[in-house]
Amino acid sequence: PGGAGGGGDTTASEYERATEKARIFLPVSTHMGATASMPAARAGPWAEGLTHRSRVLALYRSSLRTVRDCYIDRDLWIEEAQNIRAEFRASKGATLTEGEVMVRRGMERLFEYRHPDPYVPIYMPGGSKYQRNVPPPPHRVCSILPPEEDRIR
Picture 1 (cartoon, rainbow, N blue to C red):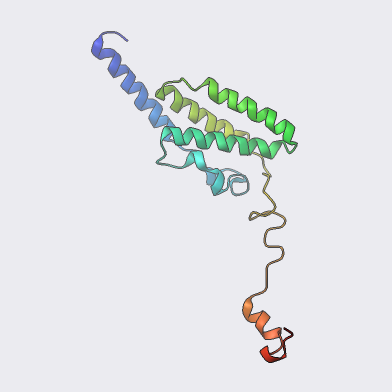
Picture 2 (cartoon, one colour):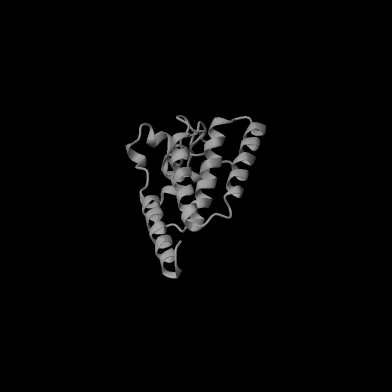
């Protein structure tokens, strides 16, 4: 931060370096267990083309989901979620350059702490009750019913 023009150039180059580092996304599909622990619904912070605000919000939501995988007890989960919220709020006043670096570190930390067997709601794909009682196809039902005139009304 020396003269009027020098400080602007330094800030711009720092911003470009931080932005370039933030553009290097973690290769989700190449890590062990990536398909089980990092489905498409959880890859929010890694999506390209998001604004910084959207990336931070996606990182926050993904952090809460990851913590939910580790803490099944709701009271413990709420306590940890409050810690995460406090950590995000403490970083609220950061500059864009600092924010990009923090998001990158947060994504690395999120990927490091992911659970090998994440919690899946029972009614979602991969859940224990997903399509458990699927109704039979209509053409099969019609073939086992009595004719229309013999049905009880």
